[in-house]
Length: 200
Image (cartoon, rainbow, N blue to C red; front, side, top):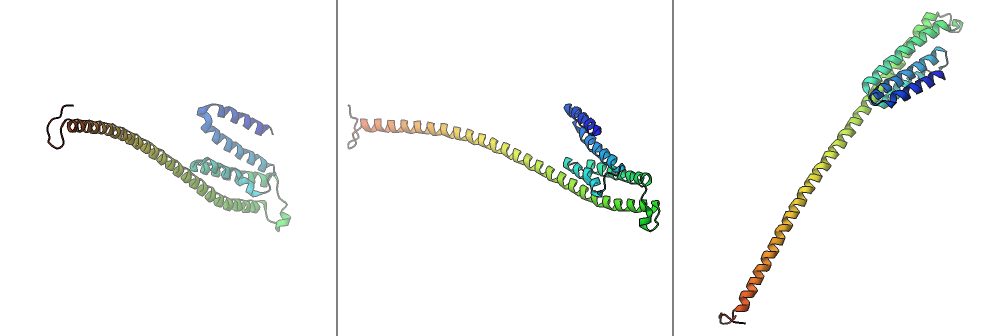
């Protein structure tokens, strides 16, 4: 209880400062590793899948290097916990046909090593895939943003062209009106049949 409160308070103060937030990711995961290690030393963890919790949790950060570090640290701490547990809390070997503690230790280490080989492959694939997906999504979002900027630029150019065409249309309408006015004046001052100038 004291450990979790201390870690939570430390995490809170680390996250308050912007430049230390990157460190809080490592601190939180390694604190979780130490917590699982402490529980396993006291034989409180009976299900071996509980050891895989922190490496799987590290996949949420989308950092392959971090996931690999956490997985290897988790493997090392698990092996240390198995060795300490085997010698501090020896198993009754009568049940295992007079097998020694060393043979049981080696079989445990081989079993956990096989489990961690599969776990390592799983979390490595998951974190690599997650990283690839998030980078693809960021690239697509960036392409969309650039496309929107291009469309906006093209829209601005089209608006300028429309404005220029509208001004030219207005000039053409004025010219057309002047031509019609001139024709009306010319036609109004001449007799259509004789072509002579008519005084009004």
